[in-house]
Length: 456
Image (cartoon, rainbow, N blue to C red; front, side, top):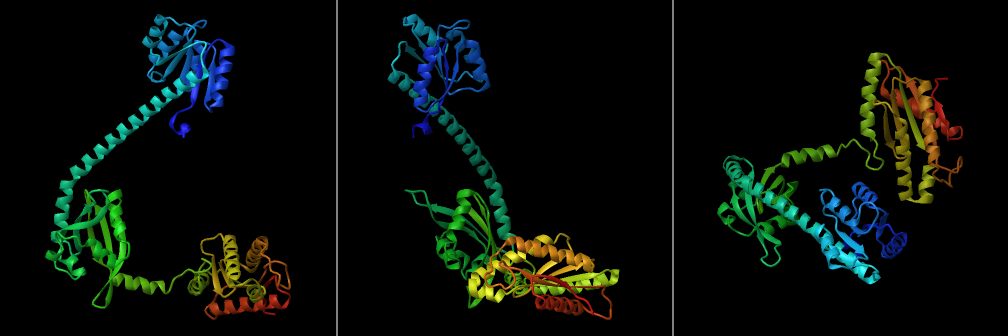
């Protein structure tokens, strides 16, 4: 705990090496960081480079004496607040008074007692630390006062804005003030100050039944459990809240968008009915483009992209390549390692494959089960084979153990490659069929390989 209260960077200035050694050993044993100087000029230079938390200063030294060093430091704004303890064999009252006159804060007479030195150092460092804390607190209070002034200055504008919103908005609008526990200061509920008819209708209430009442906590926790704390957070932190919530009214579930903004010791809230939008979002989510397990594109996006790229390459008379790959003996992998490991294997294979693809138009998708597909526009058979080999290498480097594989001690894949220049006489299914046949051939020939489709 002592290191948390007292700073520990101390500079000892003494031309007597034995004194330096004794003091240094004494302070280091108490975990103080110690620096040393043997003359006044060196001490001043050391302080200017890195101000210590406290200086122990001998008086009688060659060149600048301790009094001169102290006066010099006290004239410098950067060093004037560093506490200086004089330590000297001079024991006359005059010497001690002079030490305090030039800016010293304590005086230790040689020969010194270890307990006395440590106690005086600790006392002065504690005082300095308390001064620092006091300055920080003063600055904090200053900022807090300024913050409160800014809030109060904006209160009038906020009230005018709220009035305008309430009177003209087609959304539900309300303003509430915090009701705090007089003992703890914690917010226990909110009192409704303003509420427009639309807001009252959302909760199947009349405006006059809400204004001035402590009903918010009861209503909001019926809408969404523990959401009361979210609104408390708006008031306590000043951070606005935006969230969607649902509320069932007369057997119909409706969705609303809520925005809450701090107002002094309370908040204003605007609520908009977004039920129709939510219905559309739910419909769109049913056709999500990402495979939920692997994080790559799903079969729907594959089909869409293949059709689009088929038309583009047909128009540009460019080759379109397709790779379909299958994890070798995946069923045996699943049976042996379990479905959780199987899912993890699919994820790692998918992500490894995805890393190979660099061009924006290329697409990696989960084709189904343990099958994946890669669409490569403007790519000939040789280029597609290069990609297939890179995919194989990436998966090989994963080194996923597969004790039930008959071709490798690690997870491997079989890949089928097809490539055509699309024409009006053929369709994307042609490309898929050829890649599928090539993959089947790769399996027949021993798996763990890439085969390009040939018509022969």
